[in-house]
Image 1 (cartoon, rainbow, N blue to C red):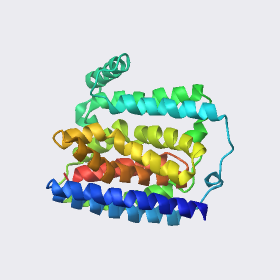
Image 2 (image 1 turned 30 degrees about the vertical axis):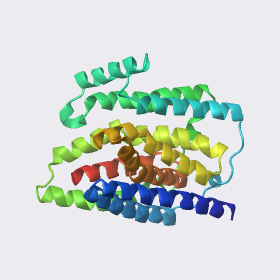
Image 3 (image 1 turned 45 degrees about the horizontal axis):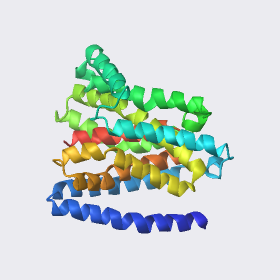
Image 4 (image 1 turned 60 degrees about the vertical axis):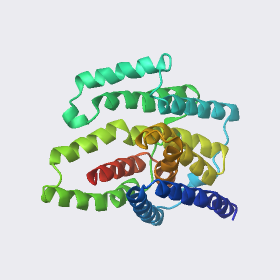
Length: 290
């Protein structure tokens, strides 16, 4: 009953914000984009429902054993700091930017763009989204299995749910010549290295699991989704010709919705594989339709 009350509160807050963000984008003339995002939200909702039907609440859905709260807050602080510096990637941040630029340059020099899309990010992103935060969390007392790297529940069945329709679409596009095999492979490889598992680790495996020990899990789920959306604010603002408010609206109706869904998949499967597959598949599906 308590969780149901929490969900009602979250819904009453989220729904008006979501509607207003869509209305604002419509007023800016973004009709096609809003319709596409609404269709995407319906599709995500359907597959999320199927994910819920396929999985069962695990023991981990119950309140977890408390650990040192100060250590937990330190872990959350580390992840928030990494989200901040990576979200501000266009600015020169002492030491961090030099490190990222070095790995970016190494990727550009060594990996083939024909297969990796953005080879620099295929090296830099795994370092800043996974290797560094994972190492810091281990130093602060986290265990790998707590971070989505342990045994999961119904992982491959959920992956098939999220792969089914995209596979049919890609086969059709390949068969009709509308999509080249190498283009599809490059998109799959590029998204797998540039975001996919590595973003899922940072937002779901690291942040969500820490928040879930400090908050009631529906609020932890909602908060990590909002932060995932805000993490894309700068990029979205650039895509909206520098309109900061439009960039924020796009965060709310796009990445925040996706972050909520990926977080729910992770919560039900307790493993990063299924949300990572869903993340890559949805990105590539969007690219397949331009």
